[in-house]
Length: 291
Image 1 (cartoon, one colour):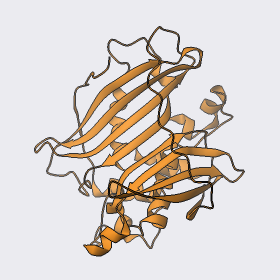
Image 2 (cartoon, rainbow, N blue to C red; image 1 turned 90 degrees about the vertical axis):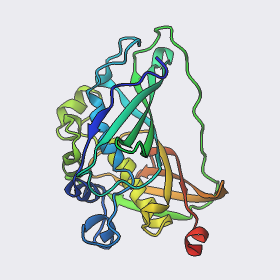
Image 3 (cartoon, helix red, strand yellow; image 1 turned 135 degrees about the vertical axis):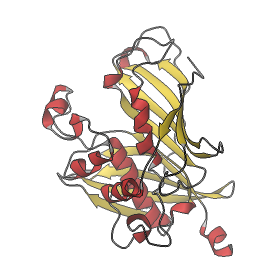
């Protein structure tokens, strides 16, 4: 199972898709670099490649793997590495999504997990634009005799006041705007699906929270400069409901291999953590100022 590669799939996008995504995650009118296609700094928001990964959902199961019902899979953790910014449109070029299995793990009574790697690649040149490591979890579907898998690294935040905080107020419309990016799961629109799954009703897309938090990090730690972000990861801890307030606390922990490390958590207004194990690597301001 490890190392199995699926057939590559063509992916494409327009400037309109990029603009919609930026709006859907909360970019504001003072960020024309994300919202106005004629701005000289116009760029694709760095987590947009995750939208292109929706193409990979057409795979129903993994060959040589136990029969797992992927309809019940939930996001566990995602790490995004940005090798270079995507062009603001794919028009005139051929881009591919390349998807492979890293491992499928048996977690016993609690379920199974599977780790995959996705890359967005220019098929003409072979250049890689973004690499995502995704860990997904399928509750209750374990005990099939497979390997337990490696333990994931934990990135704890310092025991001090955060260096920056970003607050987002979601609304009932948050899910309806974000779903226009292509994730039309009824769980994020009407209460029936969430009630059947024991979630109590509508929940917000996990990748909305992931990207909205990234937006806050760019504002607070990168002065809105998307090109400074090189690695971004977080663990999905608990669901978010329309109307919840999201508070992201951020701590700079120093320079690692030439990049500044920022650790973060996102919590609801009541203090419940929704994104944990948050870590970003960004180009330090000292490097920016010397260019």
